[in-house]
View 1 (cartoon, rainbow, N blue to C red):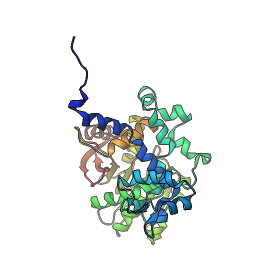
View 2 (cartoon, rainbow, N blue to C red; view 1 turned 45 degrees about the vertical axis):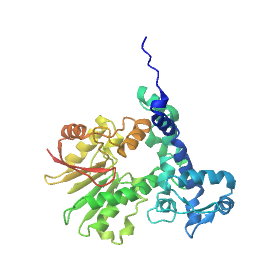
View 3 (cartoon, rainbow, N blue to C red; view 1 turned 180 degrees about the vertical axis):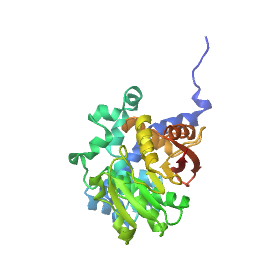
Length: 343
C-alpha cells in the first residue's frame, strides 16, 4: 500500500502558510472596526495612546489595542511607543475628512452584503447566487430600498469612495481627444466624469444614469456648469450619442445576455469614430496575483452572473454586440481600460 501521508517536517512553512491564509478575514474585520469607529480621525493631529482612543470611541482599551496591533502589522497605523499609535500613509485614507477618503469604500466592501455571501461561496457554485438565496432579491434591488441604507454610507457612496483612487489611474492612462463629448454610462455620482473633465479642459461631459441617482451627482464641483449635463435613462433602452463612452464596472456586473444588450445599446448610439472604454479588471493568465481576483469573487458571490472577463472573452462579447477590441491599456492598478470601436 502506498503511503500518501504528508510529512510536515519537510514543508512546515507551507503548512503554516495555509493556516494563516485561512484566518486572513480577521484583518478585514479589524479594518472594518477601525473604519466604523473612525479611529483615523482621532490621530490626524498626531499619535495618541490607545487609552485615549478607547475613551473617545467608548470601547475597552485592552481590546482595542489588539485590533490596532493587528492593523499596524500590515501598515494600517503604526505603533510608536508606550501603547501609542500614529497614522501611516495608508491609514490617512481612513480619515473621513481626507480629500480622497476610502472610509466609505471600506465600509461598503466589508458590509454584510459582500461578507455573508462570500461565507457561503459554495452555494454560488451550485445556484444562481448565494446573495439572492440569503436576501431574497438581487444585489441592486437590495441596495435600492431605503430601509437597507446604512448609517453614513450606502452602495453608491461606497463606490464613489472606491473610485477616488481608481479614477486617478484611469484618467492618467488615457489620452482623451480634444473637444470631444464624453458620456459616462451608469456613472453614478459622477466621480469618474468629474476627473476626466478636470484633467481635459476642452471636453464636454454627459452623466447618464437613473434619475434618483443623478440628483446626487458631484459635477458642480467642476466649477463650470457649461461643460456638463445629466441625462436620465436606462442602458438597456437607449444611450446618448458621444465621441467617448465610459463603462466602468458595468459589463462585469452582468451575465452574457445583459452585458451584450448594454454594449449593443451603446453601439447603436455610437458614430463611426466613437470609442467605447470598458474600465474593469482583465485578469492575466497564469499564477500571477492580480487584484482583480478579489473583485471577481465579490461578483461571483453577490451578483447574478457577474464576472470579470479575460481578453479572449471580451473579444467574443464585443463582437457579439457589433464592436471589436482595439487595445487593452494597463493603468498601473487592477482596473484596465479596454478600448473598443465599431466592428
